[in-house]
Each structure stands twice: as structure tokens, then as C-alpha cells.
Image (cartoon, rainbow, N blue to C red; front, side):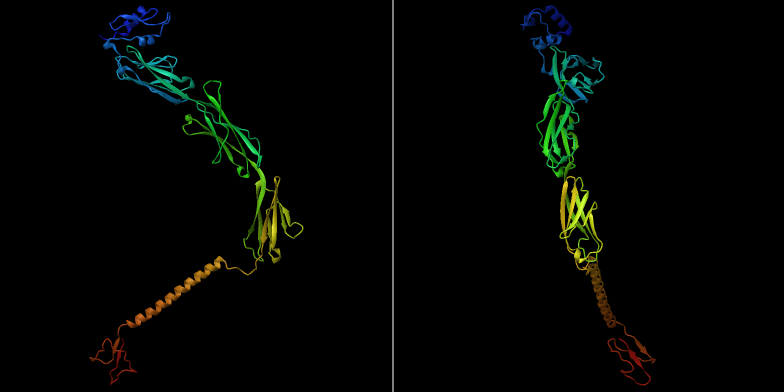
Length: 430
């Protein structure tokens, strides 16, 4: 015998419901249940609690729908998917945490334009909720109206995005070796975010993040403080506070605070040229550094009174160097944070030129040219010998009809030192 339709079952329940309730036994008769007087369960719970013991009416596991829990960032979109293997000619339904029906099959039940149908088949009902708010968090129910009614729960977790952190506590410039204390705060995170500090590439160890629940009862405000002693290297450094939270997907939100550190000046004397000689022009540059930058420079020479120069210019100029200018010079750089004196020993060299790099270069070029000329001369000599030894033989006969001819290896015979006879004259060239 098949399962009864939903309508007769509802009528049967309405007629037979009594204090203590009733249920069917194995032989098909109603049996009482232990229910308190006056308590009525909701309709779907009543249907779910009704157990049919006839073998052909036992529920199959294939009729049990299934869903998955979902996590979504506030403002994002979540998709709720409900599936069932054996629908038993019934439709799937989605309800929100307030048990309001959202969709029954492909039919919209709640007027909320954020909720849209994604897919509706006898085996699947999927819907999407866009622009998710924190209030949308909770358990969503997928139901199928078989006998009994079967449900599946999907827990939707909404992540609150933390706001950009705010750094407070920095008011004005710090003096070297003073202690800086900064505070960082971020609101709106759910669950509570974590705060971290760093200075450049260096991590700063601040106090543990403090957590306070916001007035909405859903999100949290987190705060942290960090203290450290500043040095002159920290002048111009950026102190960064970062918010770490799963809703940011690895892209931390950060805020930075640039700090200024006041410190005493330093100085260094640099000569131009580096190796001064007698008769040359020399500039001694006093390179002062500090915060604030030194504004006054005092030049002195050991053993010389009074001071050579007090000026805002950094350079001490020698238009024409003399041997008497040799000695130790001091430059005192002064700011409102203090002063610093740098020293330089000047040795004036003789005016004789020191071989420069350009003269060395010319010498190298001259040597190369001389070597090439030498190679050309050697080549010409060998070429001359070669032409002399391989020159062709030239023979002139002044007497006609002579059958005498010189051999190819005959030496040169000329008129002065050769054979002569009668009017015939012979010249042989090899």
C-alpha cells in the first residue's frame, strides 16, 4: 500500500490529535505518544514526527536532501544549493533563518530582489543572495515534502570586513633616544581581526590585540599599541599598522605614520682635488648632516689664531696653494641640536706634475705605432728579396739570326764583363 497523500494525512492528524498524541503501530492502528497536554508542534514537525511502519512506507535515504555550509563576505553573494536523489514527486523548498519561505520549487515566495533563482529541477534547488548583510547570517533550511518531511540545514556565516586602521599617539618630532608610543584601532571586523606592527622591513612587537564588541552586537573593534626607542636612523621612517582578517583574502589593510627624529649633526671634510699641489686652487668641503641640517660652519687651523672663517657656506677656498698652507684643519658644524667638529690634514705637494693617466695613455699609443712601423719595415725587406729572386729573364739580341740562347740558370753577362766577339752583342738577365 503506498503512502497517503499530504491532504488526507493533514485531516487525519487534525481529527486524531489529542493530549498525548498518537502514532501508527505495525498493524496500522494509532498508538499514543508521550506529549504534554496543550503542546502542538508545527505542521512540518508534526509530519516529520509521524513514523509509518509499513515496509512500503519506510523513508529511503535517497529522499534525504543535502546542503553545505557557506561563508561569505559582507556585501558579497552566496549561493545556496540543495540536492536530493529521490524527490518522490515532491518539490524542494528554501527557508531563511526566520522560517520564511524563499523559494518553493521555481516559485518565488519572498519579495526580496537580492534573492534570485539559480537552478530548479526535481533533484536540485539553488538560489543566490546578493549584497549579503550581517543580518543574513544564520541557518537556512531546505525541505522536501515527502512522508515524513525531510530537511537539511545550511549555516551561512557572514564575515564583517574590518575598516582601515587608524594610528594615533604621534604629535610632533622626537629627539634621538626618546620613546615613541603609537596606538592603532580598527572597527567592523567579524570575527575579530588581528593587528601587527612593522618599521620598514622590521617587525615591531606590540602588545596583544585588544578586542571589544561593537554596539550592533555582531562586529568587533580591535586595538593595539607599540613602544620603541628612536634613533637617528629612524628619521623619516614609516611605522605601519596592518589588519589581518580572512575577509581580506591576504590583502591586508594598512595605515602608516611617518616619524621625524631630531639628532645632533655630523660632518666630513672632502678636498677638491683629492691630491692638491702647490700653485693649484683647492676647495675643502665640509659636508654636515643632521636634523635639523647644520646652518653654521666654523673653520680653524691648528696652531693658528683667530679662526679662519665663520660662515653659512660649507667650503673653505684656497685660490693659490702654498707650502705654508699645509697643516690640520677643523670644521665645526652647528645646529640647534648641537655641534660636531671634523678634521682634515692637508699636505701640499711639489708643483712638478705627476704622470697623469692621459700621458700614460699617449705613451701606450706611441709604443703601439712604433711596433707597427717596425713590422712594416721587416715586411718590405722580405718582399724585396722575394721579387729579386723570382724576377723573369730578359734577353736582348742585337744580332739577327743568332741561334744562341742562354740557359735559364745562366748568370748575368753584360758588355763590360761578358763575352764579346765581332759585331754580335748579347745580354742575359736572370
